[in-house]
Image 1 (cartoon, helix red, strand yellow):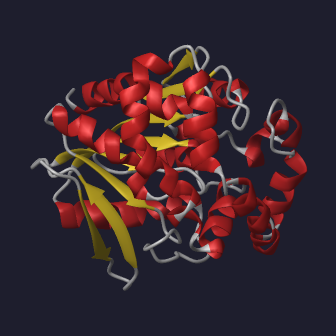
Image 2: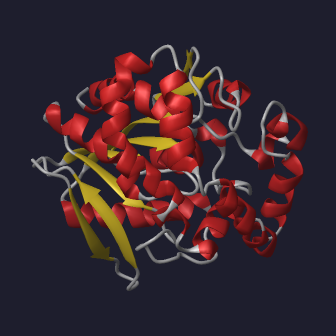
Length: 292
């Protein structure tokens, strides 16, 4: 089956971009991108799930690229959008996989009917609950910026220009300058090449809507709208030991605060390499959850 993209219209008239790997099933993996990002970054993950005979869909979150904003929302409020997508696509059971800024949304989806598990890749902890000192420790992102973005949507929007500039050379710097220097590169060279045109969209299509990126940053740094102590789903946390954006302590936070979480510390993995080099293990784990 070939991956397809479509624009679905929700009951309130907003539109969301959805990618589907075409497997005919009421069970699916729900793939949620980071910030910035678009659903297309998951293209090779959709392919891999299809090779296992498992349906997977990826959604460009509200405010990103072809997806309309959901103004004034909390993280958990987006569950209503996922439910409408599931209803239109005939999905009744799912496992969510979130990367980076997608991880709070993946966690929130555990409160939905039909959820069979959650996978957090390069998890983001709660600034609101953990506090700025712990949240910022070990991260290359100054915590003062996170505090400002949490306090004000305007501040988050003002930070967008700098974020866009920092990502301008992402494709070249990551795929040509950095990845080939990794000792593990030869084992994953084919996947690096296959994912490159799709993952690189986070720095192009993912930046089309400044307000969408800023609004997403603002929301994930505030109260998510649910109590982590009430997360009872089976949660797997996949955290790179070399992650400088969401350092290992961010993965340890859900492992401590969720009732049924298991932490996988991935040696020598960074914030982005984990998406390339650890795909198979993560998807295989999610499939096992889905098929229980």
